[in-house]
Amino acid sequence: MVLGEIEQLRVGLGEFVAEVFASVPRRDQRAKGDCYLRGLML
Image 1: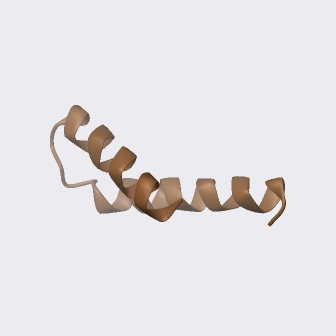
Image 2: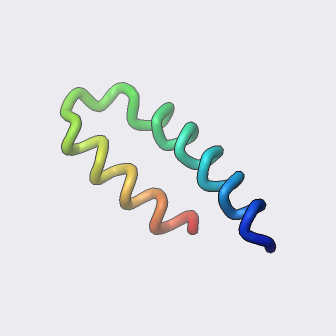
């Protein structure tokens, strides 16, 4: 993979994570969920 492809994946992953945790009411919980999923996926 080249750097451009990785950046493109990061953008797509960010959109996915935002959708998955959209129903979580607290911002801090969404942030922790974001960190967790990014760690698993990347």
